[in-house]
Image (cartoon, rainbow, N blue to C red; front, side):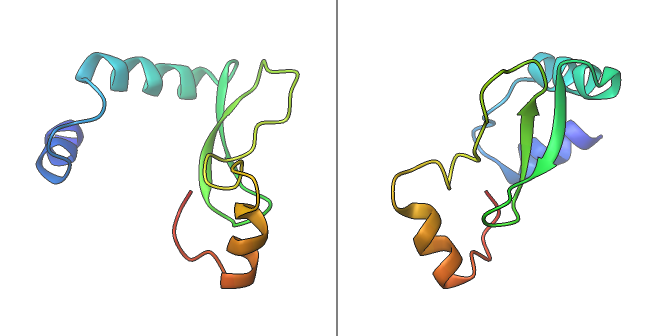
Amino acid sequence: MAYESYTDLHVPAAISFEHAWFLLLALARGDELGISECAVCGGVRLKDLLSRHRNDCASCAAPGLAVQLVAEGCAAPC
């Protein structure tokens, strides 16, 4: 039911049912992927728990964007 709702709202779907299922399983295990909040804009993002490097959210990783987002209040999710 959730995937059908997703495909109704996002045409074309950016993620297949199989990828969504594997993402759900990985998040449920909690040993590879997690969910975290961006320290700059407060957006919710996926976090690679096995990465040695700091992972910024996609919106704030762009040069100069983090300063702009903080100045504007960044109401949009990352």
